[in-house]
Length: 524
Ligand code: 3NM
Ligand code: MG
Image (cartoon, rainbow, N blue to C red; front, side):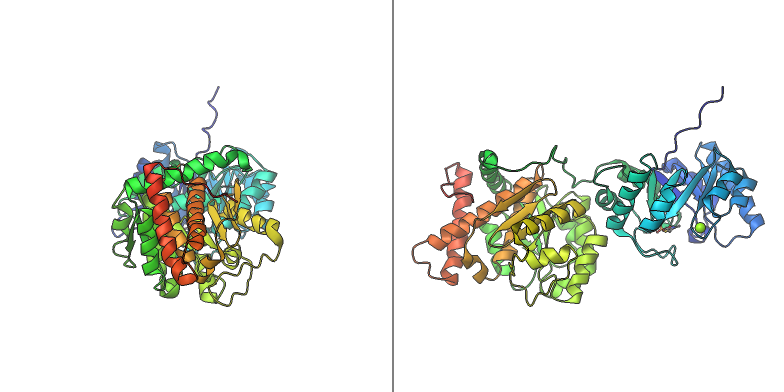
């Protein structure tokens, strides 16, 4: 009996566009090289070809794909697919309807449908099509007339909807994907439950490349490997109780000891108000600060040491420097170094709101976002009125509501969210911790909030195994240093408090390193 058709492998899906080939290249040789590099399925998408040359090209490309056992699909044109005799077709919403296409191509043809929004996702999942192409993830010059960008958050919603209707239906994502953003898109689009992405579809990343085989091989290996920043997800949802306190306190000590041992580099891209204080805080905890806003060196800084992290603070003029932000995020993503993002004054102006949205949607993966209530609400997409960049801490909806906001954003961004205030809330989406340590004087010293980012970065630079616990350790050390400083003899206000705080942070670092007991204060 004939062997069953091979399982559909969508891992690396090449969509063609002859007009984007580099000078001198032919589509046949380019497709062949890409298949050698790892392309698992090919779609011939040639929008400007007349019927006869389209069929002729289809036959030539089919000869290539058949040599490697890779399926060939035709975009839009069911008649061309029939004439070529290839494995199927990909159709959009302006093309022939699915049922007619299926009846013409027969039950064994591979038919894929485009999905650009939730309505289409729902309709497509109610057909018996073989796969979905979800996109555009980002807006792309390759398809200027495409629908609005969905971004990873929109892709995830579509995947969740599809999973609930047709759990067996695989999806690929398309639109603006290349080797610099592939892993963060996959990571952030992963549905909370249900089926993950079956593959990535690209046009320009491979077609415009002068090294299609190398490019395809690189894209496939990026798709197949976990991203460098990923830590294994916690095995279960944990409610921290006092039962965990000894574990947490020992984590504080080991984290600070590791900072002392490795002296991690904290690359600050931060605002001009807090540079000096942040550098001093970084030194006091035992790490090594560098302040640089030069995009030429962010790559070197991300690779200079096995222990480093990058703090991105959106204050003052840095806000508009998207090129710098993007390079810093992507370089640190690539080397698996943590990025801490402080969306200072996020809700204050439309420029800041847009920058935050762009960072989350497009720039790459952010490990930790730390901000006050107004800033985190802005990150959550809630409209908030912020007058300045000082902490708001209104707690308008009560603690339970704040916890909900923090947990939801963490779940959505697949990262850690820290909302600071008189009560700090941190969550990785699964585990949520509420901390009440600290002192009111903290809000009277400028840079106290920003410099927490420095200590978080230092902790993450040495503790990637459980990032939530590393952040918790940093937050506790920071707030308990503040409590001790405020109680210190002679501290009458913000000025004395500021210098006493640096001393106490230093003291905590030193005593942790020497293994002396330190936690006589209650963790609240
Ligand atoms: N379809 P590139 S986006 C062919 O959203 C195509 O359905 C899209 O090209 C969709 O990889 C797109 O060069 C173009 O960005 C993707
Ligand atoms: Mg179409």
